[in-house]
Image (cartoon, rainbow, N blue to C red; front, side, top):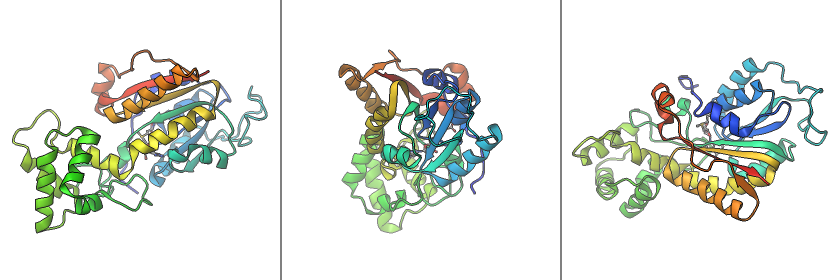
Length: 312
Ligand SMILES: C[S@@+](CC[C@H](N)C(=O)[O-])C[C@H]1O[C@@H](n2cnc3c(N)ncnc32)[C@H](O)[C@@H]1O
């Protein structure tokens, strides 16, 4: 098990407010992570199906939720209808899966409809700080970056086989890296001498391309782009959102926290198109960002943006 650095949930109160958690109603947390948002839903009396593609996250969340809600029996006094009461009698359950297959996962959990669905995208703190998972440019770990260890392709594989042009495309498309071309060229040059296997080796190559340091570390964007590519993050999100809307009850809320431009664009367009088609009402006229206080106490929240819609 990875070294545990606690994950602080981002925009917690705002997300819970937009989910409008009601006792005994069922909510899907499609990105369970450390279970922070799921725990808050349970504490408000809601029921939770938690999904994550990372078995380590599920293990961590399982412990947290068992502490927060040891009585996993669903209250029979609740207001939920018989049909809503699947899986019977349980307050929460966790399933390993990719939210790109949200409807299949819900079916597996015997859930027909949800009162609210949350996506808190990206990586969790355990993944980021793990010495083995290879998400951090500071780490000496192998360049892995798979959230789901069953995926076939790691970041090291991409770095080893993609052409200069393909690397350039990934770095520009997924993170708008301004020095995408010279970095891609430097990678291709370096790997001719010796394979690039660890995060640190890649970081040193990128640092060599940057003459000046800005506010963020020069490797930040390349690492983000590789992570998005390895985990196919944008396609998964595109596949998941229409399924989430179908799974929601009328009047149920969809809440999405994203962390970079590419994700936010997909969410924004999805909400706009479905609002124009009369399928949902946009609840967040303007994107919601964390306040200064949250950014200071949890710097990871600085790029978070929350949007929400209600199914009509
Ligand atoms: C930012 S964390 C969620 C943190 C959580 N809300 C909390 O408060 O602890 C995002 C989580 O989503 C998971 N994840 C990312 N993409 C996924 C996907 N396509 N399917 C399932 N889980 C995914 C990651 O493994 C990670 O644990």
